[in-house]
Image 1 (cartoon, each protein chain N blue to C red):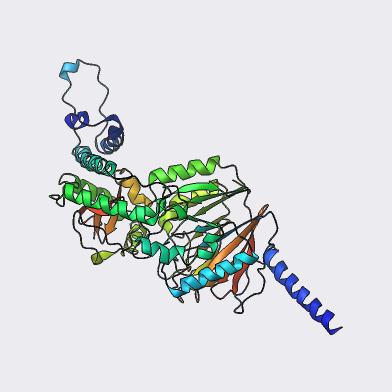
Image 2 (cartoon, each protein chain N blue to C red; image 1 turned 90 degrees about the horizontal axis):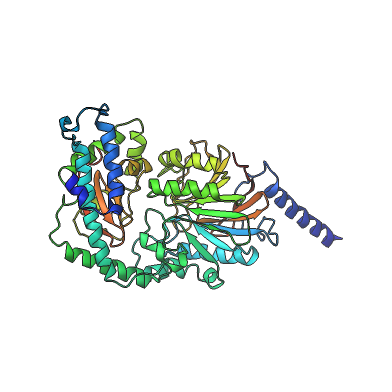
Length: 208
Length: 301
C-alpha cells in the first residue's frame, strides 16, 4: 500500500487517499488510542477493499497519464472549435490510444482485485431501498447488446450513452475528466470521452 | 359602421387572448389547431426574450420545418438566444452531420446572430462542448448571465451528474445575484412520458437545490413531446423534447402531472421575462399556439 502511494504524485494522491480513507473508515473499526511503547504496536492492518480500490485508482492514473502524453502530441482543440477540428482530434487521439495500448485486455484497468469490491459497492446500491428506481434509470436507453464490447474499440457513434444515476457516481471511485463510467446492459465500461474509446469493461456490475 | 364593428370584434378577441395569457390562474389554455397571426405575449421592448428547443438534431424534413417556424416567430417576437435541452445531434456527429442537423435547419436564426446555448443529452458526444455554435466554452455544464437582464441560466449535464457538478451547481446557485435562476438540462425530473417519464433519481439530488436556490422554472427534454407539468413544490417544469423527434401519443393521462400536453406535432417554446413574471408560448411546427401562460417568480426560501 505504502509502495503504491509513494509512486503517486500529490495531485493524484488526493482522490486516492479520499477513496481509501472512506473505505477504511467504513470497514475497519477504529483502533483505540494507545499510549504504550510504539515498538509493541502491531503493523497497521491494511483493509483489502481499500487496497483494491487503490490499485484500481493506480491503473486509472496510469491510463490518464498515457492519454495526456498522447493528447499533447496533437494540435489542441480550442473552446470554440469547428466540427472538423473536433472530429479530427477525437479520431486522431483514438488511433494513438489504440496503437499505444494494442495489447490491452479486459481487466487491465478493472483489475481482478478491484472487480469484486466494485461489484459489492454497486450491489449495495442496486439491492438497496432505491434499487428499483436506479435499475430503471440505468435500463433506460441502455444500448444493450447493440454495442460490441471491445477494449480499445470505438464506442459506436449512433448508439446513445446510458444515463448514470448520480447515486452511482457518488458511490464509485471518482474519475478524472478524461474518463466516464457507463453501462452497457449490466456491464460497467470505462469510456475515454476525448477519444470515444472503450478503455475497459467489467461484467456483472448490475446485480440480477 | 360594419367596418368599425369588425374592428371592435378583432380588438376584443386580441384583448381576451392577451388577458388569458397574463392573468394568474389562467395559464392553462387549450391547444388551438389554427395558426395564430400574433404571438400572445406582451412582447415588450426591453424585456428579455428567449426560446427553448430540445431533442432536435435529426436532419429530417420536420426539423427543418420547425426551424423555419422559429425563424418566422423571431420576426414577430425577437428572442435574443436559444437554450437547448439536449439531444442536439442524433446519430453520427461528423462535420457534415453538424451542418445537416444543426447549421442548416437554423441558418436563418444563426445568420441573425442568435446564439444557441446547448446542454447535453444522452445522444450527444461530449465533443460538442467545444463546438463554437453551442457556446459551451468547452464545458459540459456551465452558467451564463442573460444579456441586459436579471436572469442567469445553468446548463446541467444530467446524463452524468457527478458529485463535482452537484457541488458546483449548489455553489453557483447560492452566489447568483440575479432574480431569475433558470436551470435547463436533458432529463426531466417530472414528466408524463410513457417511454421515459419522471427521473426520481435526479429529483432526489436536484430538487432540494432548486428549492433552496430560489428556482421558479426549469426546462428539460428527453421525452419527445411538449408538456407543462403542474407546479411541483412551487416550481414549474417544462418538457420541450419535440424539436425534431416526436413520440406521438406518449403523454400518459394517468400521471396527474400534466397542466398542458401536446404530443401530436413538433414544438418549441418562447418566453419573455418582464420583472417578476415569465410569459411563455409553446408553438407547434405549423405555428399553432399550443400553450400559453405566465409564471410568477418564486421568492428564495
